[in-house]
Image 1 (tube, helix red, strand yellow):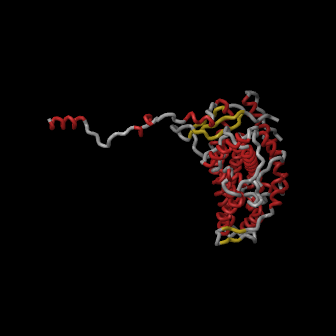
Image 2: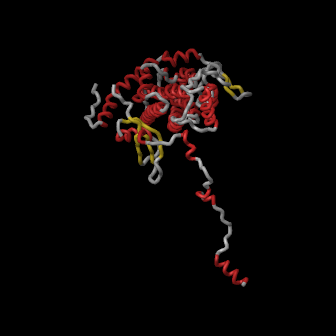
Image 3: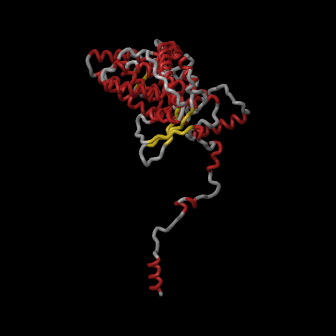
Length: 328
Length: 105
């Protein structure tokens, strides 16, 4: 299926645009990567900027609810793991801003757009992490859903994004394993712990079902993104892969899936479900979620509190006296 | 607000002595010394690393992908390759050849 999109010819004649587009698509079909200096259709560039920018923002915003739990980690081992995970997520954000920069926008501008609420981040980080079990659910299931998305995108056609994602997936593997271990411990714990885990799943189920984005019926860009290998699987295909891999594991842990509509269809070997409310999804990702404003504000304060570090780096480079952190 | 856009440095990572330095990505930093510190945080959190290089991205001169035909072989260059040469599986040594000639003589 070819989706009609308005073409920005970038000042080229229609014939020249078609010639370049043909070469570009042939390269992608051969499985070659597109590099920053290559010609690319404006739509490809804009879609990638949007995707990578949102992805980078999500890594940064994902670190916020988890970071708040570091002082409350139940054991020293958990604290070390959570610290490492948060450090990874922030590092991934930086890697991704670099990848997006190769397409045009500056890192400064992207960071600014997140703080001013102009750009989006993943729906799941608009919800609060209320208990320690939420931390476990996020680390296991949200990282699992993210890995499904990212290992797919790592095979995508844009070189800098694909290379960043290979590194990111490698590091995220520990996040998911650690999250699974936390869930196993809670699932085998006291009644209070088991209830806590179930309660967390009850609250996180819908956001997780929405994580891979609107259903294919609603997603207008998917066909072209798949054709250009920006995405290799549709949102519904990714969601299906997640359900197949993780619903049996949740059931093994004695968790109840809080979705009456979810049922396994043996004939087609798929999980069937009623679509979540995509209007709620749209509202949430447009900063209308339960803690959207709190997240953006936390990001703004983190940026402000890091100001002295950036000033110190700049001063050291100019061989000037390095300012000390504020004492308040 | 401090301008922290800064310069871009390409980062090369060596996993063990004797191995080549491999390009792993890039980083923003106000100077090369800071770039090394930040590159260590960003690129050596997991895999073994014994050495890092940072190079200002602007110092790199690259060929253009659109001119990649410059790498195409214009003529048969098989003479540059080991597979461009054929030798028989068994070789008659000169000693054996001399002996055979004297026997025949």
